[in-house]
Image 1 (cartoon, rainbow, N blue to C red):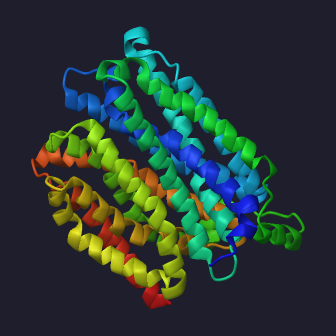
Image 2: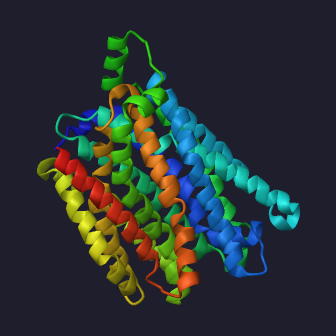
Length: 416
C-alpha cells in the first residue's frame, strides 16, 4: 500500500478536493438540463428545447481544449500549482453569477446569451483542472504506484459527480417540481461558489511536484514553448493518447449524464428515483476506482484496458436493454466496465509525455476527447433515438469509439 499518511496532507487532499469541487460545479448543469431548457431556451417543441440545452452542454466542452492549452502552458512554464489555483477561481465566480442569473422570462434572449457565456468560461476553466490534479498526483506518487495515485484524481472527479447528483436528489426531494423550477435549482450553484472558495483556500500552500522541481533545477529555469514542442516533437504520443482516451470520454457522459434522462423518459420512473440510483452508482465508482488502481499496479494497466474495452464492445447494448427493466443493476454493471478501463487512463497518458510538455499533452488529450466525444455524447444519443426510433442506438456511438480505442491499444501493445 502506498504511504498515504505521508502524502495525504501535502499532496492528495489539496489536489483531490479542488478537483471534487470543480467537477461538482461543472456537472450540476447536466442534472438540471431539462430545467435550463425550459427557463433559458423555451421552444414550441420540447425536443428542440432540450436539444438546445444539450447543445450548450456540448459547446462548453469545446472550450475545454482551449483551456487545456492555456492552463497547460501555465503548468509547464510557471508550475503545476499556479494552473490549479487559477482554474478554480474562474469556476467559483461563474457559479456565483449563475446562481442569480435572470431567466428568459425576465431578460429574453439575453438570458440565454449570458448562460452560454458562463458555460463557455466554465468549460475553459475545467480545461486545466482534472489534468492538473492528475499530473500533480502522478508526479508525487511513490515508486510503483502511479496508477493508484492517478486513480485518486479520477475518483475525486467522480466524487464531484456524486456530490452534484446527491445535491440534485436532495433538492428534488425537498422542493416541489414548481419550486425547483422557480428557484430551488439556484441553491446548488450558490453552494458551488462557496465550496470552490474553500478549495482555493486549501490549495493556497500547495508546493510543486518533486518531478517538476527537479526539471526546473536541471533546466535552470529555461522553458521551451510546451505547445510548440508538443505538436512538433511529441505529436505521435499525442495521437496515441487521444485514441486511448476516446472511449472513456464518450462512455462517461452516456452512463452518468444521458442515461438519467433516458431512464426517466423511457421507463416512466420518477426523476427522484433516477437521481437516487445515479447517486448509488457514483458512490460505488468512487470507492472502486482506487481498488482498481491498486490492482493495475500489480497486474499491468494495458492488460486491464484491453479486457475492459472488449467487454464494453460486447455488453454495452445488452446492458442498455437491461436498464429498461433493472435500472440499478444495469447502471452498476455499465459503471464497472467503464471504470475497469478508465482507471488506467490517467497514468497511461501521463507517462506518454516528457515533463516539459506533460501538462500540455495530458490536458489537451483529456480535454479534446472529453470536449468532442464526451460533450457531444448526450446530444448524439438524443438525436440517434429521435432519428432511428431504436432505444439501443446510443450504444452504437459507444461501440464506434470502442473500436477506435481497441485498435489503438493493440497498436501500442504491439509496439512495446
